[in-house]
Image 1: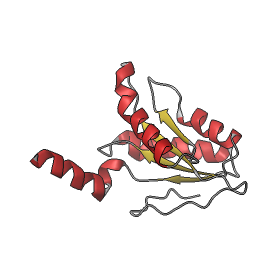
Image 2 (image 1 turned 90 degrees about the vertical axis):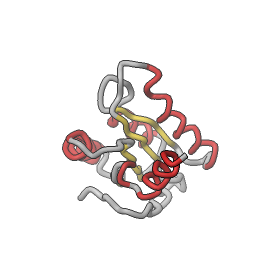
Image 3 (image 1 turned 180 degrees about the vertical axis):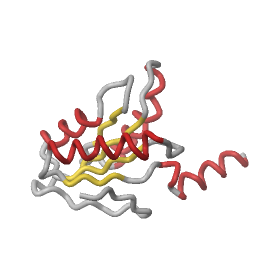
Length: 137
């Protein structure tokens, strides 16, 4: 299944069990436990705004859980579709090479799970506009 890098946020259909699609916020990871707070805060906002949407955070390295574990957890909870949002401002090797390989491993492990890989947040016009607004004060 090819990787999706859609510019608009298409809605994934609800699963066959009428659960909404799960969301995975994917970050690099760090040894510093405070580093993960912004990503965890985004997850908490999603939970507050859409209480029925299962959301998990996952990390490439140095922080747990990893992508496979987060997707395993969502699949075990019954979702049939997962949207992965890379929480990277820049698109370097991790976003171009490592993450697509991890997504393919998730697809191989869960062939019935529909997996959408979004483009990195740093490529989203809404975020770029917000950052420009913040920089202007």
